[in-house]
Image (cartoon, rainbow, N blue to C red; front, side):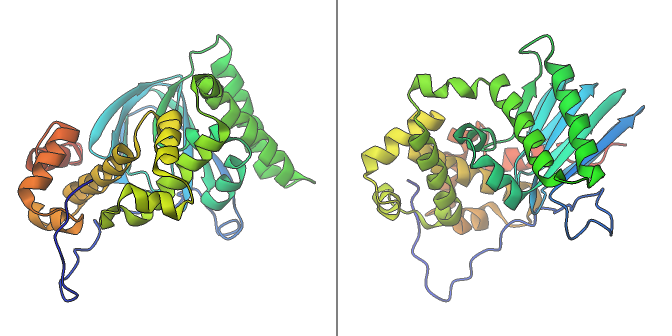
Amino acid sequence: MHAVMTRSPRDPIPAPAPVPKVRLYVESAEHRESWFVNVGHVTEGGRRRTAPHAHPAYGQVIFVRIGRGVMNLEGSRVPFEGPCALLLPHECVHGLEYEIDVDRWVVTVEQTYLTQVNARLPEFIQLWTEPRVIPLTYGPSAPDDVHALVRKLEHEVRSKALGHVVGTEALLTSLLLLLVRGLRLDEVDKEGATRAAIKLADRFRELVHAHYRENLRLQTYASKMAVSPAQLRAACVAATGLSPTKLIHARLIIEAKRNLIFGDMSIEQIAYGLGFVDTAYFTRFFRKEVGQSPSQFRAAAREQTQPAM
């Protein structure tokens, strides 16, 4: 776990990084209050770039049929090339830079509804634990199968026909199932992760998201979940390949990166806000996890996020 300094009640806690929030760009006045799934088709003959941002209340899957580009994920550049799917969970900070000849479909799912759909299969929960680039090359018909499902989903969403909510859920579930199978998440059980372990690891991640600044001991997390530390450790390793401590470190790194990219706080203030005892300790931790010092990462990430000329 990371070391912490003792704060007095009067000590100010630095505010979270001001990550830009972007609402659904295709929502209309007619559907703004009632939508739960939206499908948009985008074709462009030129280059387009979106600055890093997060969606406040929904996840997205972007199906790139033709073209290529780069995703900026929390300051790291991840290339992609169609046919592929870009999976962007709720609150994931991402920027997108598309190159020439892009044909893509954007499926946006309201977060509360997505949570309900994910509850149908533990592998769906795993699918959304992190942003992903999913190449649609696991079968000769994969790109066509995905495209056909997206087109059907678009028609169902827009039709408002009898039972369209049930139809939409069925098509969305089928779409997510194709992605799960493409990532071979359906074989996780063979590697030792039971459905119970997957759900336990997901609950642990939710607790970490709520308490990662507090330097809670593993025993405390386990007690909150009514399991032993050994059970928690086994579930996390089986479901994610990472120990509970590594998952906590990963969450700290995400927040540190966001503060470095979007915030104006000094590195000392960021370290303090994340509960570290001093700047040197935070710098060593960050360098070990990322491979760069915080100042190096900030400079490189901000250069990447500058608008293209």
